Length: 73
Image (cartoon, rainbow, N blue to C red; front, side):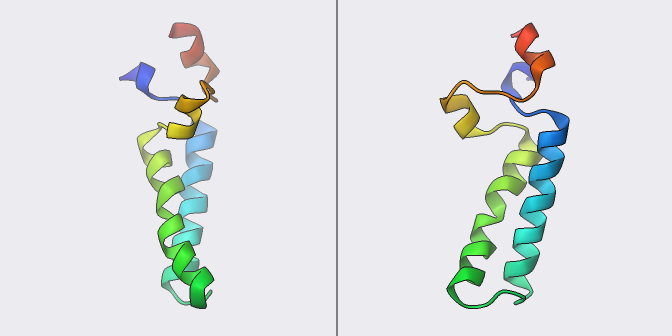
């Protein structure tokens, strides 16, 4: 399972925070209209990737932020 994770701890925390902020802005109505709707759904992407620890874009470009795991892989 460790080889599956390609995000460092700081990256995961940042993604969860950004995702939560986007969701709050969209779902509470702080941002309305089309942008609010986009934020409602776009917020799930960083939230889920941060919770799981795996980013498909990182995997596609063979990039990772957790350097300790890179040495083990």
